[in-house]
Picture 1 (tube, rainbow, N blue to C red):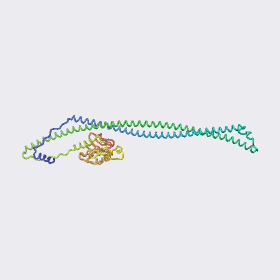
Picture 2 (cartoon, one colour; picture 1 turned 180 degrees about the vertical axis):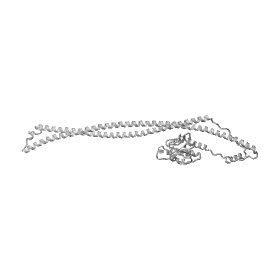
Picture 3 (cartoon, rainbow, N blue to C red; picture 1 turned 135 degrees about the vertical axis):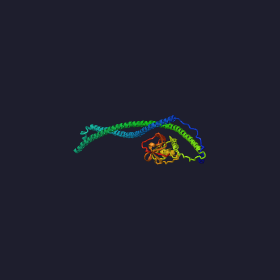
Picture 4 (tube, one colour; picture 1 turned 180 degrees about the horizontal axis):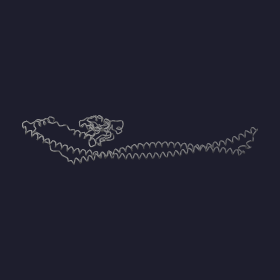
Length: 431
């Protein structure tokens, strides 16, 4: 192939009368067609930006509701523990009340038994005359000392019976008071248990309500995400259509330039041949500067072909998406270490590899891989960076305030408006 090119160039230099004809003109879309295409792409981009804002707000509300669910779950746990404590206290109070009732009943029976014994003693004494001082009680005494002893015995028996009855009555009263206190404590414990049971029902209802709100918000966020993905796809198609029209226009303009140069060269050669027909001039062939436009579009196209591919931390290389790696935190919670996808710098590696530029898998190194240009002069195909030294995030600038990026775990490769918060003041240009 190279030898054929050399032969053609040599023929053109040595034999200027020989020239290749410019091919027929390519399609030339009208300015209106290109303008309409751009307007459609701009409208889609604006809609993507609007949906991005809505999704950001929806995800923030979803996070708030998720936090509220966690809070309500803890309150439900507290209510469950409080109910179990109240149930234990009520059961203990019930046992104490049952024991106090048993003791009170036993004390009551003891009073009745003592009263019956005293009544029997009184009846027996009555049959003999009296409890104390009965004359019959003194019959049979053999001496004054014996008579005195009998008198003291009767008095002691009467006093002890009355004292015993008083003691039993006092014990019965104490047991009755204890029973009353135990019953009051049981009533209070039952009230606490009822209140705790109601609190648990209220906490469970609040938790269920919070879960339903969180699930509803999750559905809304998912719907917005779906709309955003759909419009992003439409934006990609619109951008592709505009690029196709602009490419046709560029090819047509190139054809016009080639045609003009052909005509100028033919006129120049004719003038030279007329002035020196036997000594044609020899000219060194011009060396055309390589255009970077094709390389930029290759890079953009390679990034665009993976729109919607999931984010995977540590994922992506020169050949495409790969399984991510563990980070011990957020990325692991999304399963990046077993999912195929790109992270931000991995997407840049793949995109620029198509243009023969092989970047390291770290945005901080990628920031220093090319020429720094002020952010205000950024062009399509430049890389944009965030964080100190560009080490936080990287995205590919598409022009018109839009960029393509692999943003974070739980998301996917997407087109979004440029975020200027925390952005580095310089873009990096490789092509």
